[in-house]
Length: 115
Length: 114
Image 1 (tube, rainbow over the protein chains, first blue to last red):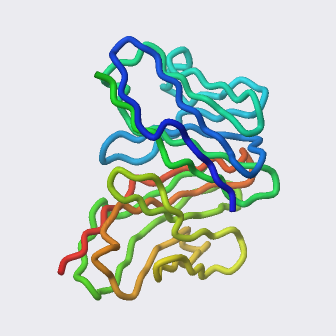
Image 2: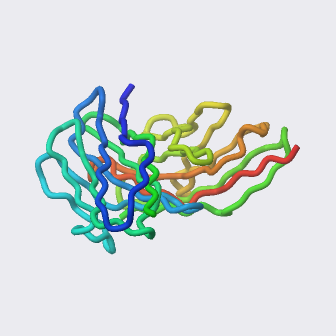
């Protein structure tokens, strides 16, 4: 099957610092990756779409300078939360898709807590 | 554009009773439809998916869903609820245009009473 792995699974950081979350497709080449955010008791909201080698496309209301997305290879995308604040505390989930498949595959998520 | 509406943010059933979680979608292109389950503090688990083949889709743990184009629905059912089915369920839509960007419904919390 298609496996997507996120690292770390959880992270605690101090307010004002930056934190990087990795999303890797382990057994396929991901031409497109997506980043979602899920606040407690809410649904998953798409933050941005990234294609390998291109700039990410952000959804309306998502600050591109705060949430830096890099998709430098076909197996790795990173999300960097810059100058994190407590309101950025959330569950971040990535997904990855590739040509010829019929769905995107989701990582296990990263729980970010900003203190 | 694509969207999903899940009717009922909370559904409560007795153990052994029928589970019915409702989902309606909107899509300007042929949709792919999914049901995911999420247990507390965990990621998503795919229950089943419709990808333009059979309209009645069987998934894991005894769940199934029927794609009804005329009703733009994709309701999830299970004949007999089990305590372990208590979780959050998300209906989602995507398409092969846009790289399978997946749009989620608001979710339905299923409670199972003993």
